[in-house]
Amino acid sequence: MIVVTGATGNIGTPLTRELAEAGHRVTAVSRHAATVPDGVHHRVADLGAPAGLRPALEGAKALFLLLSGDLHATGANPADLVREAVDSGVRRIVLLSTLGVVTRPFGTTRVAMRALEDTVRDSGLDWAVLRPGGFASNALWWADSVRTERVVAAPFGDTGVPVVDPADIAAVAAACLVDDRHTGAVYELTGPEVITPRGQAEALAAAVGAPVRFHELTRAEARAGMAQSMPVELADDTLDILGAPNEAEQRVSPDVERVLGRAPHTFAEWAARNAAAFR
Image 1 (cartoon, helix red, strand yellow):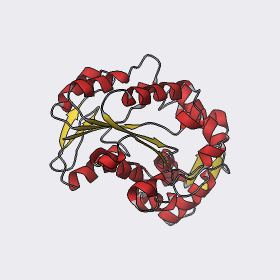
Image 2 (tube, helix red, strand yellow):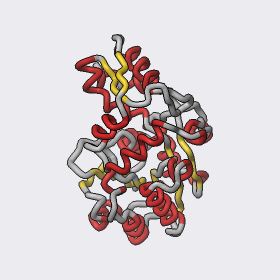
Image 3 (cartoon, rainbow, N blue to C red):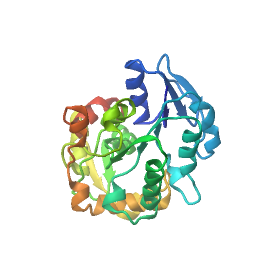
């Protein structure tokens, strides 16, 4: 059995579906009750209380570990989740980390994530670490404004990074969970091209078949909005990257294609697939 945490999110949903469609037994874990694909077992658990994960891990051979925003906060101890996996007899763990542990290693949240990577490496389990950059699905923050006003409001309109489709992250995670060839691998996951927020607005316009205006926010305006859904420090870290990405953060990684044997999806492809959210 394979346990997927964060199973109802932008990565967990396609990962759970892909594993189930391939015939694997899957337990989907989320904080709240949710609908999951036929044949998938669902467990409600709060990863902030690691012992709550224990029933879901019974009989599991592999674990996909995705931390919610509050597990990056001061005082959280996600290493306990790894220990629960070890104690439950899990044999393989795939950790969703972040590209920032190498591109900006000294931020508080990235220091904590790098420490968790080290915990996974030292656990005695088979492991793989995934380090994605920015997510294409972050554009869903604009869904309401695109639907109601046909506008994308974002900072740093002409500064871009190669955002990655969460479906590609899920596909790489699925490969790492079931294929021994990826044991001990660290993959940096990006999209195939650098794209700016202004360019994303243009892609969304094409996807919905209507003009979408771009409105540039100040950093302070963007920070206030982001702080409603994530720790302020994580919002600041994100804005530092979006406003002044370094060379490593703008680099297109070959790792998605290396694992999947195909190019990663473009932002335009993600937008077309998710156009209903913006109409």
